[in-house]
Length: 289
Image (cartoon, rainbow, N blue to C red; front, side, top):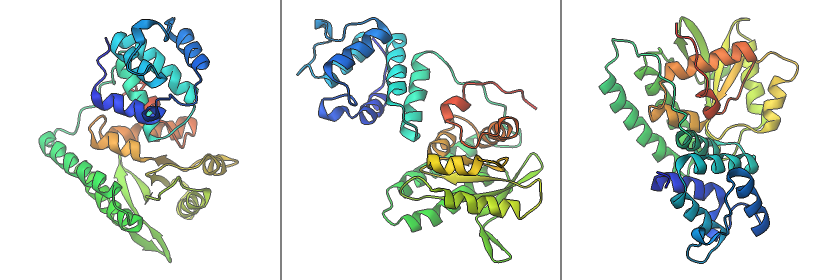
């Protein structure tokens, strides 16, 4: 049987809409066909009969009966079928990678002067604060508080963050330094994905500085596909986007903030990638300085 944890099962169930007894938009026929094509198993075999025998109940039985490799393969194919993006999907893809035995690559060691115990404690506190802000009904209040969370996070990793400042009438949320390079920083925590206007404004702020100025835009709920297209069409991108799932993985110590930033900076420089799913970011090894 697979070793899916209760929390991991809940992630899949919420994404696939299984509380209703259904699984995505599958009919009995298409549900059976996908599972047969993916794993060679007949989901309507008696061994998967569970409770009412609904698609959701049969999938739960499949998780219990089959091993990690088979379950991982099926869930990977289901996520491909779902064809959506976002933090919930990224979390599920990380679970799939664990099931398939694709271990996370070893991180670069932290600066020896950094007390890892203190870092872990600080990250745990910031993670708790992040979850509290996620439940805050006043999104403007949450957005302002996020600035303080980010400042503490960048300070934790000694990235010399600078609090919000104003330049010739324009507000910039802040900046930080990594590997002797300065990056402008802006953050937004809106209810929905950000439209192109916010990103175009940030690009304008960057372009108004020096030709080598770069930036990081933290959009907790991501950006729309139209926004991504508009900021990459016809111009070399000068910043990359970090979403809430990325931030949660850093706060959960899946990857350190400096390591995350270096990987994204490299992908921006080499491939012009503005948005990179976290699961894809973790697939590749990168040479260490």
